[in-house]
Length: 107
Image (cartoon, rainbow, N blue to C red; front, side, top):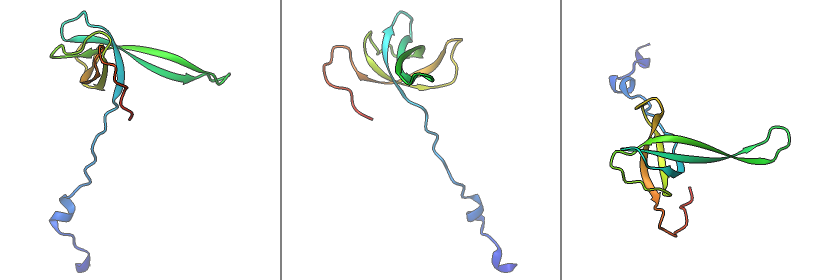
């Protein structure tokens, strides 16, 4: 039994897992509010009976504290704590501005 003792460093070292938030890429469809934008998230969903892929669009309100996103921009958003009744996403970065012609980055 004396051989099976653990040192304090072994017991205090815990496996630290990084929380990976779900990141979404979306298009800005409205910038009317102050520090708030509306974005459209496009999804492809397979029909349960016929197997055809259908386009579905979800519009969500996103917190944009510096008002950097413009209409038509492609942005990356992450979930955050609820800031209002409809706003529970936060703007992470602008992937591509609306005037840009460069292709979207893959990944």
